[in-house]
Figure 1 (cartoon, helix red, strand yellow):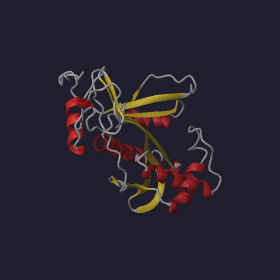
Figure 2: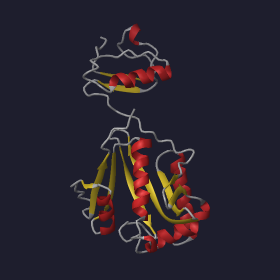
Figure 3: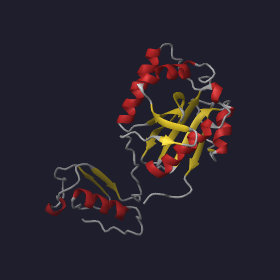
Figure 4: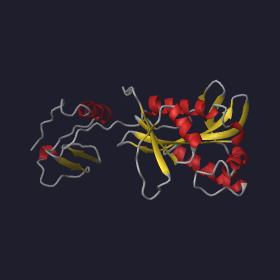
Length: 249
């Protein structure tokens, strides 16, 4: 039985279907309720239903198909600039600065991670980060002063969720540069990139409740307390920022 689709009830469905049809040149036969399409013959289906189909696709007619694809393509690496800063990809040559950041007890006080003990630890960290960037799993910027190519901090976007249209943000800065507005400047630029290039609609920040610097920074950037509780990590608090304007075209 072929389903009849009411496009007004599924506002995101028509454009998504047309996009797949244009891109792949495929014709879909939609079966009432839920159809699992695997590229092979569908059991108990008619010959007409065994049309050329997308190799793997599940359609649930019980809920609207409003999923928007995030634009996660980090090659070539997106270099971001502000009045004072250049946010660029981390390099192996940055191992000394990354070691300094990741071995500083004050910086790591609320991060719950082990301190780096050697430059090799920092070098391995950089390699892992760049592998994740290459796979488009996360994006991690080295924060540098534009007139000095020296890393003074980092800012990253990770834990991307296509289903929930969101990601998580994290950051760290050398102590002697804290309180200068540098992190606010860097995070503002990354938020703009997340909303207007990657097209996420929500950004989440999770941090220790005693990290007052992060609380003040996030509130200056219009993040709000999500009032979520994590029973396994009671000292963590959740803040979020939603995109006020839908920039998806």
